Amino acid sequence: MTLPLVYHPEYSFDFPHKHRFPMAKFRLLHQRLQESGLATEQNTFRPGRARQSLLELAHCPDYLDRFIHNKQSPQEIRRMGLPWSPALMRRTLIAPNGTLLTASLALQHGIACHLAGGTHHAHRTEASGFCILNDLAVASLGILHSQRQSQLARPSILIFDCDVHQGDGTANILKHESRVFTCSVHCDKNFPARKATSDMDVEVPKGTEDDTYLEIVKQAFLTAIDKAKPALVFYDAGVDVYEGDPLGLLNISLDGIRQRERTILEICHEKGLPVATVIGGGYDNDRKALAMRHSMVVEEAFAVYEK
Image (cartoon, rainbow, N blue to C red; front, side):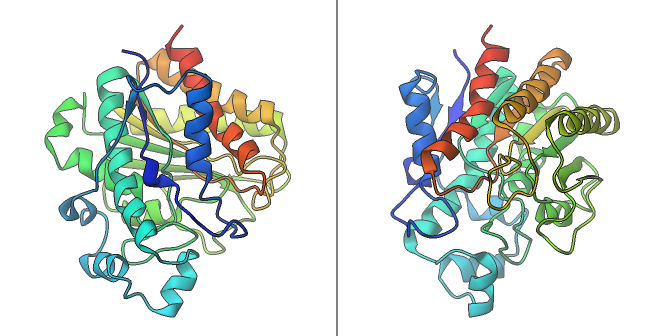
């Protein structure tokens, strides 16, 4: 079987086009991969809605109830950054299961790519920065608390987060979980203003360009692998590091992003580390250009693993 992809049509829905969050990017990413022949009926898996018991591994039941039934306060809605709707609720309850499915497929096949995910600002009791449920935390804990743990060579998971913003929610939710090693490589002068403490934080100076950035990422990844000795890697391939991203503050070119993806995936392949990729952040009024940037991690996955 060819490289597994995970996607659900409800990841994108009718949404205000002028809103900062590019809700259409998931549909456009899938469409691009279909047009290039990488996404087919045979290799595309559709996740279902996550069970409450799974979500409660990472999130407070009261918070889940407030979100699901639209009972959040105006302050909570503002911190979430997204207008609540039944469609938002449905896609939010599917996406963490998508990342868990991606992880399970990666353990079977060596790699799998989720065409969503990376909602790393979501905390145990609240949403933040367009992130409502933390799929990385949910999926990691889901693996460790289910029969899927038997698929792990050892109970150790590495979350390697290259979104331009720190994975503060992931760090906070998992801070007492010794079996999950959180590593965030992010811009030092970007959101969130108050950083959390990951197991390993690597701050990249504002304005950093390709060569310096790629060396930082490579060395951080090798160090994190050495410290975590993982049996599974979650790779958050945020493309908001791009030089033209309105929320980025780094100066990474398209070639730089592609090289980053190639480097991470080649290391995983060479070391025999199963890797589940998620797309993370990326913000652009040109939604098709943004989908192209998100497609790079999938394209490089095929280049590395389908040789």
